Amino acid sequence: MNFVIFIIISFWITQTISNEAIFSFLRNFLNKKVKVLGKLISCPYCLGTWVGFGLSFLIVPLHTEYFFLDIILGGAISYTVQKLFGIIDNNMYLK
Image: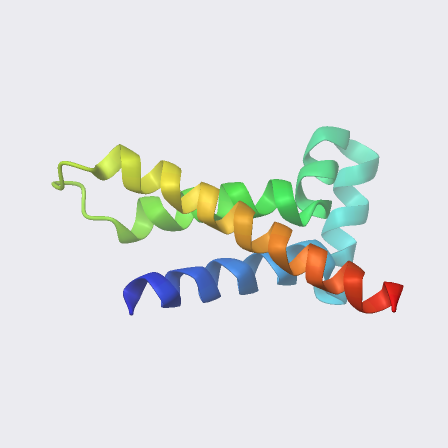
């Protein structure tokens, strides 16, 4: 169950930052000032990886033997979910 909650939180944070109007000022500002960061937070696939990575860092206990594996998998799972939702979203518009 914790895994599902992790995926939902990661997806929600990524979508909010990369697509919603509330963060448009930040995306526009970074696109003008620091293009690399602007592109990073405008791309849900790129941002999803880093959000998953960051959330894993916060959630995974430091004393586990799989700490680094959990962090890498967190980023990979977030990226994969973003990609799947992108494919579903694109297919809805093609019909």
